[in-house]
Amino acid sequence: MSLSRSLLLAGLDALPFAALASVATYVFARTAVQPSEVVGMLAGTVGVAVLLALGTISANCYRANRKPFYFTRAVVVEALLSLP
Image (cartoon, rainbow, N blue to C red; front, side):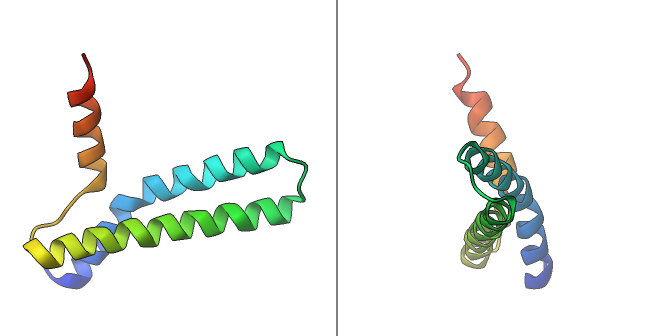
């Protein structure tokens, strides 16, 4: 798998976590009385930061092992293994 394709897959795999972080930031920032422009900008910044961080970690794991690392699969497996 080429590096550009692995970066694309890493970004797509990190996308649900970035969206969740954006929504959570938006919800928690809306509880305080803030202008919606500030809240939206903060939520967007947090989402992009999470996307870049998780994508970078996944790309570094690929570069080290030459095997793609999938966050979504890891989170789902860990959640299923933690069930009693």
